[in-house]
Image (tube, rainbow, N blue to C red; front, side, top):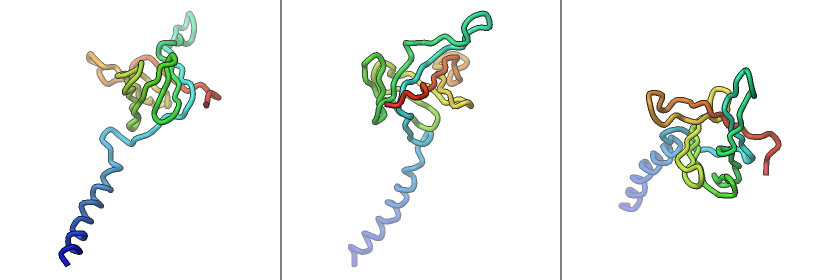
Length: 128
């Protein structure tokens, strides 16, 4: 009898923990589509429309992993915020804007947390 009561008493806390597992602070856990991502800054009316930034480009492979210049790293995608957690881009953060482009996040100054000028997009047809 005591075992049944104990098992029944544990059911509610376990169900509550399971229900809250989907509620992740910062948003839902996700992954990016595999492929090559190019990053660029906006150009000028007098010159090129965009200026590609090769130091920022990366390739999403699998298991929340990426490659940049043949060096592997990992990333975390929570909601719309992408954080590179290891590898050559460790510490860099990007966020999806209204056009679903990844944009760098400003890490300091009065615009901290806002969107920077750099934009990154997956190159069509680059799936591995």
